[in-house]
Length: 199
Image 1 (cartoon, helix red, strand yellow):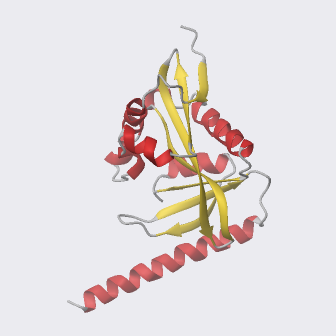
Image 2 (cartoon, one colour; image 1 turned 120 degrees about the vertical axis):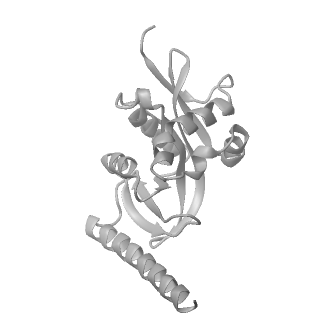
Image 3 (cartoon, one colour; image 1 turned 90 degrees about the vertical axis):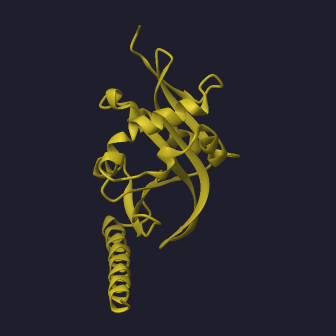
């Protein structure tokens, strides 16, 4: 046993169900805190279908044991700065007993390198606003909060990283994020007031 982590594109012998199991286990603490991440409950077949036809899945292996995963899918998304092509980052997780070893960082880097090779220069993902650990890690890797949107069960923070440098000032990005968050809060407050008034 050499304790060398290998980060590669998913080989055939790693099953989609293995990937699903890693996601489920790694997101256990999120479920305990009431942060249900939809992708963490996908079956192996659902993950595969979600990434087809042009998405990529990367795996972290320790002595051929699957310990981490991360994927992306080319996707057009609209934000306040327009509709653009992003590498939508998804299905990212490291088993709890292997966190703090730099595995997630290696997965982030290989995902970014792969997106660049496909001509994509922007990375994007969304997460629960209370998922502070992921938000902090993403910020360390250069991701910026750009949007705050309503979801079916909870709101989502959207984060973007421009691989060729930010085209906007830090203050503009922060102002636009705060504006989007405030707009959603006002909208939710109005909904609550109208709901109470209708009783």
